[in-house]
Image (cartoon, rainbow, N blue to C red):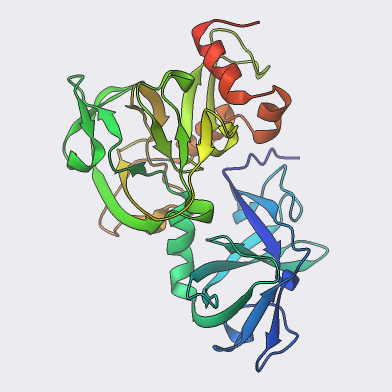
Length: 332
């Protein structure tokens, strides 16, 4: 049986958790673009509980990955549509509808891009299939938040917003490398896009470092503290949250920048090693059509091979504290 290492994991609900309580399709769950009517009012079930959908790039497209709380490993995952809904207070919530298809069953799930309240009422405003891939790319892509200082080839620390294509950054494995493309965007910092703040000193960051949940840090352990069998590991920022030295920041808007090289690189942000944009079928939508890259399946597989999953981190106690000590060689 092939190993299906998760590349991304998102909190999702079953479609039946969001039902039309008033409107043309009263009683129906949220569905695809042909199954909904603008103006219908939906209500999130009182007992709705999110579960993690883990995905990877399978041989036949996006599939459910090992360790997913939703679906079965190998099930096909199809992104259908992006719905926009409005709460009574005027707050907009976008959600993505996905279909999971396996040998035994087909089921719909939805991924909200902002927090939703149990028993909350949401009016369907618009449905845009073409926007779905872009929105998934927004939460899957690696971006650096404005103000984050990256290390240039000459050692200077420069805020990401001051960089331009053609500038050369220091990479861990390939020395100075030229930036091929920089993308800029402004997003609502809620839900899957709420940034993670790593406090100064934690994991050796020189200043507070803010990363999006799926952004991975490269950590070299002086001792294999996590029992992974290797010194070098990649760890998602979201998996380091301890509500003390590493916490989630919800609310407002945030400006961020994607940094693309010819290959997937490890660069330096606020003095610590982090990854650059990794091109996958999920993130390709953020790139203009004219931008080419030499990134290959090998880049994705190597990154997946050294990534530590959430379960392994939780079993080791506070991952931020333990990995900080492991990187310094100071263990109990």
